[in-house]
Length: 175
Image 1: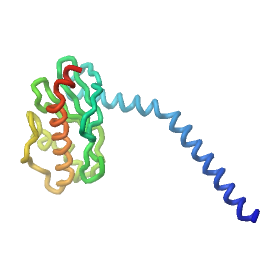
Image 2: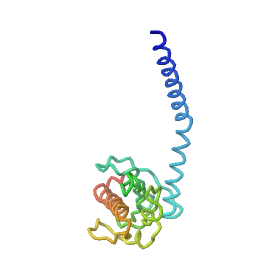
Image 3: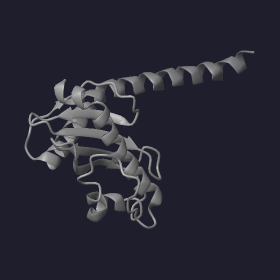
Protein backbone atom coordinates (compact mmCIF):
# COMPACT_ATOMS: atom_id res chain seq x y z
CA UNK A 1 0.00 0.00 0.00
CA UNK A 2 2.79 2.41 0.96
CA UNK A 3 4.50 1.73 -2.37
CA UNK A 4 1.43 3.00 -4.28
CA UNK A 5 0.98 6.19 -2.21
CA UNK A 6 4.55 7.57 -2.32
CA UNK A 7 4.68 8.19 -6.12
CA UNK A 8 1.31 9.92 -5.93
CA UNK A 9 2.47 12.19 -3.11
CA UNK A 10 5.73 13.02 -4.90
CA UNK A 11 3.86 13.90 -8.10
CA UNK A 12 1.39 16.04 -6.13
CA UNK A 13 4.22 17.97 -4.46
CA UNK A 14 5.93 18.53 -7.83
CA UNK A 15 2.66 19.85 -9.33
CA UNK A 16 2.10 22.21 -6.40
CA UNK A 17 5.65 23.57 -6.65
CA UNK A 18 5.32 24.02 -10.44
CA UNK A 19 2.00 25.82 -9.98
CA UNK A 20 3.46 28.16 -7.38
CA UNK A 21 6.41 28.94 -9.68
CA UNK A 22 4.01 29.78 -12.53
CA UNK A 23 1.99 32.09 -10.29
CA UNK A 24 5.20 33.78 -9.14
CA UNK A 25 6.43 34.24 -12.73
CA UNK A 26 3.06 35.69 -13.76
CA UNK A 27 3.01 38.16 -10.88
CA UNK A 28 6.60 39.14 -11.62
CA UNK A 29 5.98 39.91 -15.31
CA UNK A 30 2.36 41.08 -15.61
CA UNK A 31 3.11 44.78 -15.04
CA UNK A 32 5.89 44.79 -17.63
CA UNK A 33 3.68 43.02 -20.15
CA UNK A 34 0.90 45.58 -19.65
CA UNK A 35 3.41 48.41 -19.96
CA UNK A 36 4.73 46.98 -23.24
CA UNK A 37 1.19 46.60 -24.58
CA UNK A 38 0.47 50.23 -23.73
CA UNK A 39 3.69 51.36 -25.43
CA UNK A 40 2.83 49.34 -28.55
CA UNK A 41 -0.67 50.83 -28.58
CA UNK A 42 0.68 54.37 -28.24
CA UNK A 43 3.26 53.87 -30.97
CA UNK A 44 0.55 52.54 -33.30
CA UNK A 45 -1.67 55.54 -32.52
CA UNK A 46 1.30 57.78 -33.28
CA UNK A 47 1.80 55.98 -36.61
CA UNK A 48 -1.84 56.65 -37.49
CA UNK A 49 -2.23 60.27 -36.39
CA UNK A 50 1.25 61.58 -35.67
CA UNK A 51 2.45 62.80 -32.30
CA UNK A 52 -0.71 63.19 -30.24
CA UNK A 53 -2.24 62.36 -26.91
CA UNK A 54 -5.04 59.83 -26.66
CA UNK A 55 -7.27 58.69 -23.87
CA UNK A 56 -8.83 55.28 -23.50
CA UNK A 57 -12.63 55.30 -23.59
CA UNK A 58 -14.33 53.01 -21.10
CA UNK A 59 -17.17 51.65 -23.15
CA UNK A 60 -18.91 48.31 -23.15
CA UNK A 61 -19.55 47.40 -26.77
CA UNK A 62 -21.76 44.56 -27.81
CA UNK A 63 -18.91 43.44 -30.04
CA UNK A 64 -16.49 40.95 -28.47
CA UNK A 65 -13.70 41.64 -30.97
CA UNK A 66 -13.15 45.19 -29.71
CA UNK A 67 -10.07 45.34 -27.49
CA UNK A 68 -9.60 49.09 -26.90
CA UNK A 69 -11.13 52.37 -28.01
CA UNK A 70 -9.22 55.62 -27.69
CA UNK A 71 -9.91 59.17 -28.80
CA UNK A 72 -7.56 62.10 -29.43
CA UNK A 73 -8.27 65.71 -28.39
CA UNK A 74 -9.12 66.57 -32.00
CA UNK A 75 -11.88 63.89 -32.08
CA UNK A 76 -9.99 61.24 -34.03
CA UNK A 77 -10.78 57.73 -32.87
CA UNK A 78 -8.68 54.59 -32.71
CA UNK A 79 -10.39 51.22 -32.36
CA UNK A 80 -8.36 48.09 -31.69
CA UNK A 81 -9.96 44.99 -33.17
CA UNK A 82 -8.86 41.38 -33.01
CA UNK A 83 -10.31 39.19 -35.76
CA UNK A 84 -9.99 35.68 -37.12
CA UNK A 85 -8.22 35.27 -40.42
CA UNK A 86 -6.72 31.92 -41.28
CA UNK A 87 -5.52 31.78 -37.67
CA UNK A 88 -7.82 32.24 -34.67
CA UNK A 89 -7.48 35.89 -33.56
CA UNK A 90 -4.66 36.20 -36.11
CA UNK A 91 -5.39 39.80 -37.09
CA UNK A 92 -4.97 42.45 -34.38
CA UNK A 93 -5.24 45.94 -35.86
CA UNK A 94 -5.88 49.54 -34.95
CA UNK A 95 -8.37 51.27 -37.21
CA UNK A 96 -7.98 55.04 -37.28
CA UNK A 97 -11.19 56.98 -37.84
CA UNK A 98 -10.92 60.69 -38.57
CA UNK A 99 -13.11 63.46 -37.19
CA UNK A 100 -15.53 62.98 -40.13
CA UNK A 101 -16.13 59.31 -39.30
CA UNK A 102 -14.09 57.84 -42.18
CA UNK A 103 -11.34 55.24 -41.94
CA UNK A 104 -8.08 57.17 -42.20
CA UNK A 105 -5.55 54.44 -41.53
CA UNK A 106 -4.87 50.90 -40.39
CA UNK A 107 -1.95 49.88 -38.22
CA UNK A 108 -1.07 46.31 -37.20
CA UNK A 109 -0.52 45.50 -33.55
CA UNK A 110 0.17 41.86 -34.38
CA UNK A 111 -0.40 39.47 -37.25
CA UNK A 112 -0.52 35.72 -36.75
CA UNK A 113 -1.27 34.83 -40.35
CA UNK A 114 0.82 32.61 -42.60
CA UNK A 115 4.04 34.40 -43.66
CA UNK A 116 4.09 35.07 -47.40
CA UNK A 117 0.36 34.44 -47.86
CA UNK A 118 -1.83 35.81 -45.09
CA UNK A 119 0.78 38.39 -44.20
CA UNK A 120 0.02 40.09 -47.52
CA UNK A 121 -2.89 41.88 -45.83
CA UNK A 122 -0.22 43.85 -43.98
CA UNK A 123 2.44 43.97 -46.69
CA UNK A 124 0.35 45.06 -49.68
CA UNK A 125 -0.42 48.74 -49.19
CA UNK A 126 -3.04 48.80 -51.97
CA UNK A 127 -5.09 46.19 -50.12
CA UNK A 128 -5.22 48.28 -46.93
CA UNK A 129 -5.85 51.52 -48.79
CA UNK A 130 -9.12 50.24 -50.27
CA UNK A 131 -10.63 50.61 -46.79
CA UNK A 132 -9.49 54.23 -46.36
CA UNK A 133 -12.31 56.75 -46.65
CA UNK A 134 -15.06 54.26 -45.78
CA UNK A 135 -17.73 55.55 -43.44
CA UNK A 136 -19.88 52.42 -43.54
CA UNK A 137 -19.09 48.74 -44.09
CA UNK A 138 -19.08 47.79 -47.78
CA UNK A 139 -20.12 44.46 -49.26
CA UNK A 140 -17.60 44.41 -52.09
CA UNK A 141 -13.84 44.54 -51.71
CA UNK A 142 -10.78 43.20 -53.51
CA UNK A 143 -9.41 40.17 -51.67
CA UNK A 144 -5.81 39.06 -52.05
CA UNK A 145 -5.46 35.97 -54.23
CA UNK A 146 -4.24 33.05 -52.14
CA UNK A 147 -5.08 34.81 -48.88
CA UNK A 148 -8.87 34.74 -48.90
CA UNK A 149 -9.30 33.87 -45.21
CA UNK A 150 -6.89 36.61 -44.16
CA UNK A 151 -8.51 39.13 -46.53
CA UNK A 152 -11.97 38.33 -45.17
CA UNK A 153 -10.66 38.57 -41.60
CA UNK A 154 -9.19 41.99 -42.34
CA UNK A 155 -12.48 43.17 -43.83
CA UNK A 156 -14.39 41.84 -40.81
CA UNK A 157 -12.02 43.73 -38.50
CA UNK A 158 -12.52 47.02 -40.37
CA UNK A 159 -16.30 46.46 -40.51
CA UNK A 160 -16.35 45.74 -36.77
CA UNK A 161 -14.48 48.97 -36.04
CA UNK A 162 -16.82 51.00 -38.26
CA UNK A 163 -19.93 49.43 -36.70
CA UNK A 164 -18.61 50.09 -33.19
CA UNK A 165 -17.91 53.71 -34.10
CA UNK A 166 -21.29 54.24 -35.77
CA UNK A 167 -23.25 52.64 -32.92
CA UNK A 168 -21.33 54.41 -30.12
CA UNK A 169 -20.20 57.67 -31.68
CA UNK A 170 -21.67 59.97 -29.02
CA UNK A 171 -20.31 57.87 -26.16
CA UNK A 172 -16.86 57.65 -27.77
CA UNK A 173 -16.47 61.32 -28.61
CA UNK A 174 -18.30 62.67 -25.58
CA UNK A 175 -17.18 60.31 -22.89
